[in-house]
Image 1: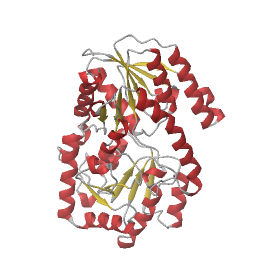
Image 2: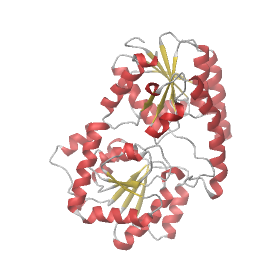
Image 3: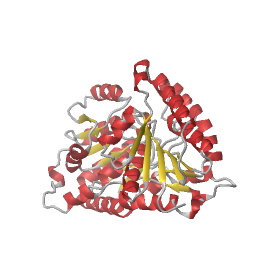
Image 4: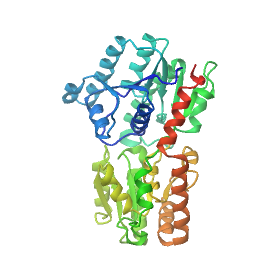
Length: 400
């Protein structure tokens, strides 16, 4: 592989406005790869293009696979329309070699067109992003329970053919946690070609703030805790309301900020109302840039209550501001957050609430975990360092 290459990113599944982990990875990598001199082509539909531009992704070439006209027909029709359009466009796509194809997620609008593009351009190298295995519907820790069971079954079934295709045909696979590596090892693909991406954080805004003389003292901050992420069953957002109710039993004035949006927003509002927590929880919607940073500056703790996840980058954004985290002890988080985040056994809401209260009331403990959080992000999560690491991997001899 040459030192500079054409990198073709299939991001046809991107929705926005809140970035998924896969969206964040491809946008931040594309930004830095372009700065390194690589030619970046990004294949997106109209809403994906809007998402990229809102995140100031410039210096790249956008190829628009138009599908917005199908939005009125509902999500299922829109979804499969993007798959079909992507496949048709990929069949007609002749890449200039040497070239890399990078599917930014395992969702069909990304992975299936990338597979076709690889078959059409056999000398190109396909890197498949596969960041979260769908939980089996019968798994004890599956977030798809009750009325969401059918959605979980559909998600699991849809992912099965993609896993087979990626495992058999991809030249390299991006995963976000160490436990997923072995699932892609084959006779033709060794561990060197399965890269644990994990993600990264732009540390410049937080470093500028923390090195200033304008830091808001912890005791004067508005929010005792902050959550940032999609309002989705996997993220434990409903469980978070129950946890915060326990915190408020000890600290009646405790205040939680929830940044994000998603399919569970109405259920969250209903649970807040049933728990009489309207004055304790602020639902702030999607926030980005300075708006988001202002909330981080006013936060004491970041809460990451995911009950099923491959890692989670959102908490790292807040931890860059010296905010300690609390989360469940998921397998992926052992390598994501080895320090700077207090872990509790999954499902132990009382212990989760107790750890939040301990951080709020024990200044020495708080400062210790806060320092660990900031140190972890600076040393291991800086996007500039992560992008160079990923670039060296995909452009090295390991992909040949």
